[in-house]
Amino acid sequence: MAKENIQSRKALMSRILTAPVTMEQLKKRLRISFSLAFFFFVGLFLATSWMFASFMRAEDRWTHYSEEKLLLVRLVSDLKDAETGQRGYLITGNEEYLSPYRKARSRIQEDMRSVSGIEKMDERLNGLRKVLLRLVHQKMGELEETIRLRHVAGFRAARDMVMSDYGKQVMDQIRAISLQMGTLLSRKRDFERQLLLARERRVFAAGSVLAISIVFFWVLLYRIIGKEIETRESLLLRLKEESTHDALTGLFNRPAAMDILQHSIANAERRKWKIGVLMIDLDGFKGVNDQWGHLAGDQALVEVARRFRQVVREGDILARLGGDEFLCLMPVLEGLEGALNLGNRLLGVFRDPIQEAAFSSRLGCSIGVAVYPEDGEDPKSLLAAADRRLYAAKDKGGHSLCFKDE
Figure 1 (spheres, rainbow, N blue to C red):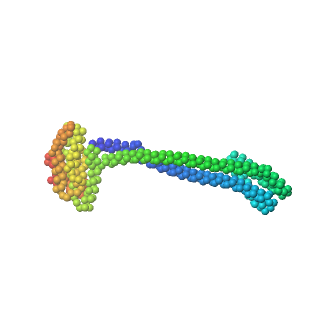
Figure 2: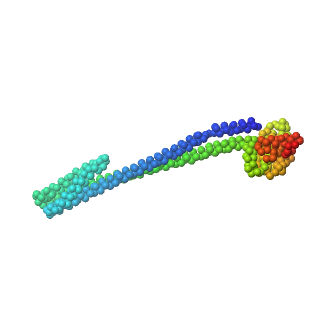
Figure 3: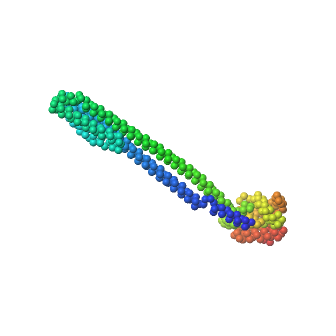
């Protein structure tokens, strides 16, 4: 049986060591998951920063487009102011009217320098800009010429030039070109805005897919790791239990019983109470093995352990020391009478024969009783006293208990 227990523990240890995922692998998977999470958040931060920077650049361009539209409006307005000053001088001949004309002309020159910088990278706007500048030059030339004629040839000559409608046609073309350029600037601004919004939607969608993938990966990894940890903990728990319990009966084994006895003695010494130790050896067990085989013997041991459990007190410790030897430890004992009562109950479990499917046998047991501290103050002396009395009970014919040395 001892050999089978050793083989069972070796097999369980082998399963733990060869489990699908080792602790190092679990740690590695956790490191990978945290690394992925870190890179995801870094990527999300960079993407957010890039989108914010793109939005700010786009805002600057949109503001620039609006300023260029206002510049075109201002140019047309300044041309009208220049035209108003020109008409006042032509009608009255009063040179005071030339003052607003000259101021408007100065602003127009500044406007033309600004218009020269409008969106040179756009081919259509670049072409319209050149046409607009040429028309403004023509309009200013027409205004200058009418003023010169009024000064040197009089009102009629200047009026005839104005009545030719050349200046009006040029001004109408300037308004049309300015309106066309403003429309193109608005369309360009709106297109870039839609393009940025579409890009934001794509980035958001990609980020959402990535986030969902990361969450799904975490959940999956959590379940896998949780399952592996649960499996390993179950195996380790079984290994721990097998290291302290008898594989056949489920009772404590010898090493565990010795540890419990040592701890109980230390506890009893502090609290000044007694401990009961009952050594038990089955009578007639060898005949079961010889007549029906070891399988029947194992079944008999399991049944005996079951019956013993039914009669011990809560808190008492049952152990199988090996073969057909058992130990019952009473960590708290008021007196010898309590140990004797338990011994008699243990003897009483054999009133009925061991009845299994393949065999039926009447067994008994011999019990040796020792009490701490009267019979010993350490595990070795207590067990020795109980063992002597056990064999004294056997010498008397068995199926009895002995609680003192003869």
